[in-house]
Length: 154
Length: 154
DNA sequence: TCGATGGGTTTCAAAATTAAACCGAAGGCT
DNA sequence: AGCCTTCGGTTTAATTTTGAAACCCATCGA
Image (cartoon, rainbow over all chains, first blue to last red):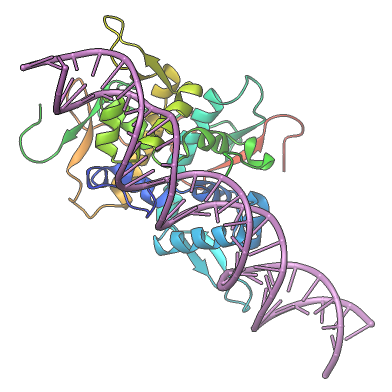
């Protein structure tokens, strides 16, 4: 995946396309921090501890791809702020999914000391669930990929 | 992120932990293909077009981390099969989230010709939604990270 | 037995990541 | 004004990772 390219097979797949955008090391952590309220280069840098040139490259790429927009703070010529665009904000579902999977599968019970809570009432948010069109809960093997056009697939 | 390590700050975060496991290039595509039914080294290799040494390294890591298990096909000494463990299968929510984000944000309207459908009735699955404990729909800015222990945070 | 597959490992070049040094602009202080 | 610090990067050089291709070996089929 050297040149940020994926073979053609995958390019037609939503997952592959998403990963082309946010599959880089650090990228989703930068986005996560943006949700935490970070906006400035130095904030991301200090919090994540990644090399500045890499952060610079990632932010540049993310701005190009419309995940972040640069806000050149209007009231002064101060340093640029990187703010999530609506497209970037929509990644929250991905972050929640990763958070939940990590919480369930990558921590000792009771090890994790933070949680995602509802801003309004402070209650933990509900676990994400994959559901069928009619609302049935779907498990890991209850869905498949199907061709939308042409014949109704096998 | 060179040595597959994340700084301490992030290590306490479910997202960071998840990415330590599945944040590598190719990894989630390998998992995706596993959901498609691929099990053999050569299948992943041919379909993804990644270098064999990298595939080898990824599979090894994923097996170690309990995402895949090796099934040494019982009825013969044939080649190993890489099958998802329950832990690996639970990644489907992450894949669905990435799929949906990609579909909405990385394709021209009508460009994508596949979809995720319910195995039972073939209907497209419902869009994932982040919800509050009480069922309210939560938007990108309607949640935050909170400390679980100690004082009730600011 | 011979060639072809499958499933890797080894090797080496190309590319990405890193840490650290450097740089210019803006702000604060005296 | 001069000086120092901070911020937001870029540049450079060393280290890692990745990728492509070559190679290995066990099994399979004829």
